[in-house]
Image (cartoon, rainbow, N blue to C red; front, side):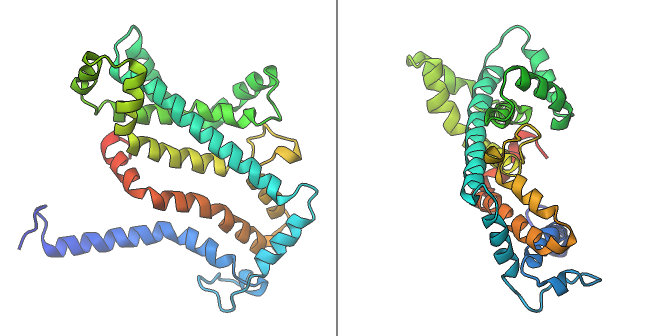
Length: 280
């Protein structure tokens, strides 16, 4: 008996089991981190480490709360900094990437091919390559130790531009020409036709940008304690040594929750984008 895809039932079962085991393998670090957050100290330091917890406790979260209460900058301030940097950087990145991708995907102009190749080439380099020139530019602009030091570099990520370009290329040119014939201007076409049709792409970009900015500790550009985001203070707590392993796990679990919830709310759109944009 054959299925519509041409594989046998046994082959489908084996493929499902393989993918399930593969998924569990990648899920294991997150599960272990979550379980460790509820372990008492005598179970955390045991060797070999256990994947389960015998006596769950909230002592790590209580200890984390007590440590945060002793800081001269309140937890609410760190949380506000993280939320502001993440939301502002994500919104600005989506907007600028979309506006730049539209003429690249749907218009023809001199140097377009060279710019497109440059965008693809930039994907080969990690963000750390640009840290020194970024620091020089931000220092000359007097933006070091301000929110702009994190927000502005987030705007110019080439991944978002590449993603939006590939997705906008799927929009039929006839649809845009019909709108122009009806008298619609380019800004109206962009907001009313293009952006709604590339919703899966900018939702996916929102997840990527949100995760990157939420986990950012300031990138070496913020030194004022009252401006630091939440991951920076969590890293300070983790620097207390092995005795704070449980507290570090509790902090890591709290930082994991927002990106996971955002992904779960839009995972279907992410899968659709990956299957049609050329990203793997």
